[in-house]
Image 1: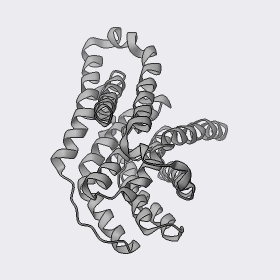
Image 2: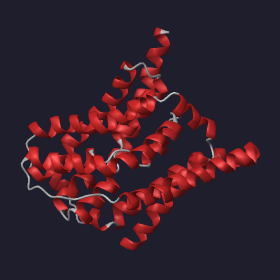
Image 3: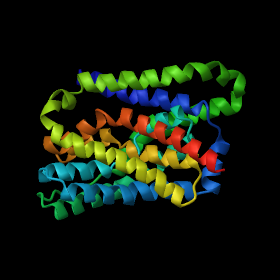
Image 4: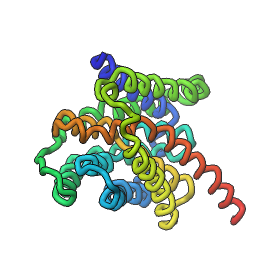
Length: 295
């Protein structure tokens, strides 16, 4: 069954990114690079502010040292592809979301080992040395994100709206459906998920829910303080709420070989997609209405 999951999840992500690409064009990304402040704000939030907020939370929260390090591992793995789909569903800035995912894929090769070594040192757990292979992480991102979304953009650019309009309405239902199938496959068939009794870890769910809410709110309000528009701000908020749990699980299980360390990522992935969508939707609707009243 694990082999089935290993096939379904990457294929699902690739199909989702292809669908997202069908509704984008190259000029969407041109705007991202000609006006880089949203990207720089998003990267700063994810790579600096997110680990700092997480450290402040776990340092004072009563839990085992290995779980505190697990929180830090999760915080060090920003920008899962699920955030691209949630951003699309909430009509945020998809090009910004995809750009953050791509940039993070380069940077985390260096940032994750740094954050983890510091976490082991400051939180008092046994120090473990490791490194991420640049070629492995970039190969995954290229095959599941960059290649399919580029194909979607090329189809949109060269075949025009006559081609993409046929799929536009259907994609609203197909893409979330694919994500749901992948999510269910992980929950019911992934070995790391099946070994977890969720009711035994209620004490970890509370700080995880807090982390999810705090990081989303911080992502939004910090972006607004830097004078980003509402749409860009809640796009960054979504990025802050949805971490790359798959990468965190890989590092914990395959590189560091510690099941306890992977538990935090397993628990977070079980609810963060739903809660991030709901919180971001609330921010989008409620604060957008307030902004309109002020204007």
